[in-house]
Length: 338
Image 1 (cartoon, helix red, strand yellow):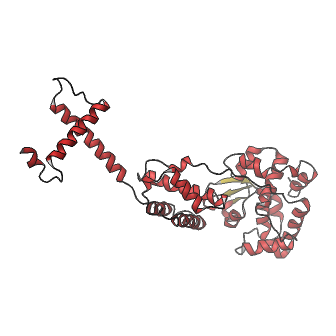
Image 2 (image 1 turned 180 degrees about the horizontal axis):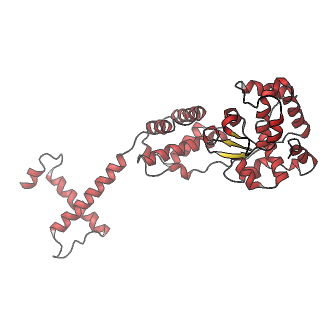
Image 3 (image 1 turned 90 degrees about the vertical axis):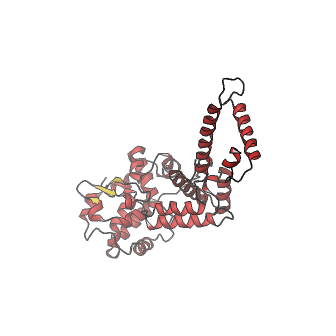
């Protein structure tokens, strides 16, 4: 009667409750948590153990249910990085939308997603492009990393997915004649506003997008002969100091040393004026790195100047044996008085 009174508001019968108690005792005994024999075993000890197990189990269930859908986690992760540059935010949104278009992914609980599901998601969302796959994997990893911090998942399943190996293609650096044609074109009055930009890309290895964001008045230390690439102007988000070689020669030039507003149009016009309408991406940065490696023979210093995390990219892509260590390399640096 007491049991029935206690269970009157519980949606189970007394018989079902008794059967659950027996099953519970059997599980505890089989697991070694409880010894069923002997008069020394007391009921209050058994009840105390039951309470401990129930509370622990309840916490596990509560924790397992504390999650959100993949869609909610993905957009929350994007929102958490709203301080990033506009182009970075645009890429994040684009890649998240591509992942959410995969059927059944948006509503999946984040905590329930396995490494195999994530691998299939990447393959379906970014099939046909290793570059997109690698970038998609990095963004998917960041979604789970954010979810882990919010306790929406217990681990990052993307850690178990290997990123495809980057096979860098060799980029031929500019020849001596091509470099001279660019310098000669930049010396003409109509291209004077681009002289500083060309110098920063060719002799400092600064990326075009970073050059466009520089402010010569605050980001160039003319007395200390160095360029300050601040984190907010850097492609990778990390700041660095780059030696400004040839600073004296730059200061001797007539006219203002500036970064023009209509940079893209002026840069294209300069290349066409130099007879180089067909342009290879990163070729100025590659030309700088190859000549730096051949002339100064200091890869750790070059790594810092380029803003790389390690030496692997230098050895696989930028260090080019075509530069050699002969007259052309010396002429490259001699042009700015080095």
